[in-house]
Amino acid sequence: STGEIQFNSGSSTLDADSNLFWDDTNKRLGIGTALPHHTLHVAATDTSGQMAIGAMRTITGSASDGSGLGFLYFGGSEDSGTTWGHGAGIMSKASQDWVVGSAQGANLHLQTTTNGAATPSTKLMVQQDGNVGIGSEEPTRLLTISSTDQTDVTIIAANDQSAQLSFGDPEDDNIARIQYNHATNQMAFRTNA
Image 1 (spheres, one colour):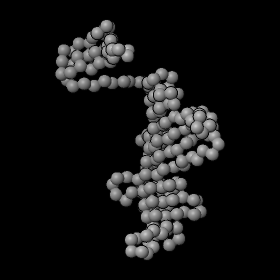
Image 2 (cartoon, one colour; image 1 turned 60 degrees about the vertical axis):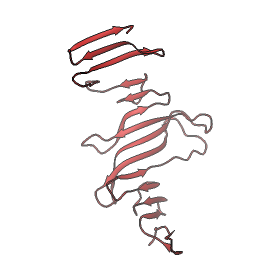
Image 3 (cartoon, rainbow, N blue to C red; image 1 turned 45 degrees about the vertical axis):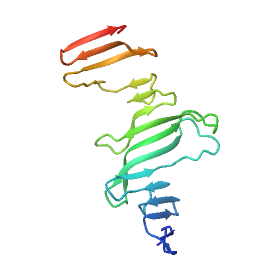
Image 4 (cartoon, one colour; image 1 turned 90 degrees about the vertical axis):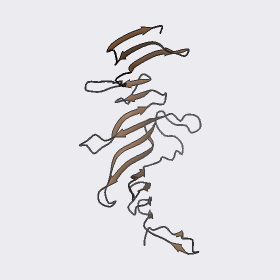
């Protein structure tokens, strides 16, 4: 059939089926689907899930700051592959104007889709300098946690153990700490520990 890619089936003859498909109109390759939605679209027919790799950018001169470098989407179809939805993804964007070989700064975005919505958005970002943002695409510290609502960070330990937040330096990783002991219900603030 049109679009099916021929392959050697092992019997010295060429064979083809819809599991390896070329969409010549849109220049897309489908593996496991005859309806590819991306440049390379891989779809599993079992419970391992579907995978679509979006536009992997070919850098021929330079990519501008903020332009997409590559996307890995996770999603599925409810109608045998005619319509696809993306629920989550990993995306890389240039963090500077690129010069291949000397200036290739990039940020990494982890995206999910909120219940009741249909568009993924960045929930966690690793910036080119190593700063991590949870709820922030512009982390100014090693770890920035941001929310438009109440922001909570929880440390959970077993009922008979302690939960702690340590502060340190290269020689001592817990020279100071805030510690809560669940067994005794005591909170301790320590320095030079």
